[in-house]
Image (cartoon, rainbow, N blue to C red; front, side):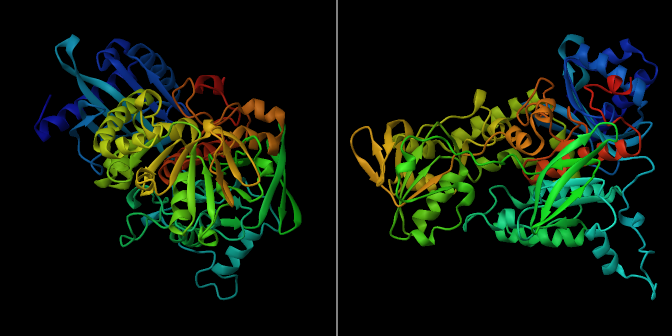
Length: 596
């Protein structure tokens, strides 16, 4: 493997030049010589107009050539404005990593190539992973920096409407419908609306909460984000450099309000989305909104469901729970432990919410018992939980987002398994202590750690910020759900005959699959067209996230702030491409099928 910076740069530049020459000439033999037998290509909308990952050299070459014939990519070159080509270790493999730029017939893109030696071919450097990602559409570039709008509609026009007049008119929708209606005003809704705004697509966010940011503001009193500030920026407006490492919920909620104002996003609060139907011929929705008690029918071309992975609360059928005489609340409705000082509480569920609520109740003076329903992955908040975000500790946000988007699923799983192994070693004392009190631990599917638990099921893990220590010290009691016989008016009756008294039961039992929300809002036919949402599908991508779905005009965006920041760009570019007639509105699994 090369070590000198100049040699590394030359190797990357040479590979890109040979790649473009072979791709343009449709020289399959030349391309084959450039790819490692165990190679991967991830395309983020650039050539395929969707998110897809192809594994194995033969399949990579077949799909790459077919889609390149349509997209006509060219101009592959190391990007001098990004991080220089370098030698790094990814998923335990030493490689040369380079960020490059390129163009297609319709857009401009960025990419990442990783080169490793091919032992079967004299250790010649070949492509191990390749990312091609669409960054902008030609003719529809974002108006940023020196290209910013000049404000001609209101600047120095003393007789016309001023900026505020225009903003109020835009947000009122008195004489028009939005092109895109976004359901949900959390980070996913804000991200996609901001991206579409910069692309000139008329977008309205609706949210049932009373105030922008209430989806965070109304959560339990002690909540702060569990990952660090450098990971969590929204597009275009970065958090101030003085912000704390872990952002408090109310600070983030207030920032959401500032963001909507600063980015000039159209946003209706206290607005309930009641459902909609789709006109295939017109390519439009008929949707019903109820805003502050008044009904409004709209006809957007696109609906983006930005309600997050956590939609409808999961209320399991627990034997005897209806007999409990105290208060029962789902974790989504829990706000503060102060009212439970001196009282007794049972928290059912051992994910992040369950632990945090139990600790909040304990800190408020309640006597708390946690009930574990199934094994749970536990990592310390520092350093273990932050290891997956290590790249964000250096370099630019744009570079780090591109790197985050560049890993194929199989490589990501391997990387996370290595991180999980390291975390378990760092947290040995913590984990041993939990085992000593009967806490059931796991490390995710194939020991891939907490993030894959989130990506596959939306939960099942805890970042320890102190509650595990309270369990180990037995200051918070632990019981297993399997040992409960039933619930009575007084509390939980155990199979041993013991009764655990309670005044409050908190159900930290997660949320129902998002398909159930789709069923509620759009009906059975559309739900079947869309299929499963979230978790990984056969194409090694999250199901129905950030891409066209089986239902034209219906899109989904969810995840943490970093996921939404990255995914929103990909989603917005597809919507803009549809609106400009560059791609069809009907979903197809491949570009060739879509244009046929």
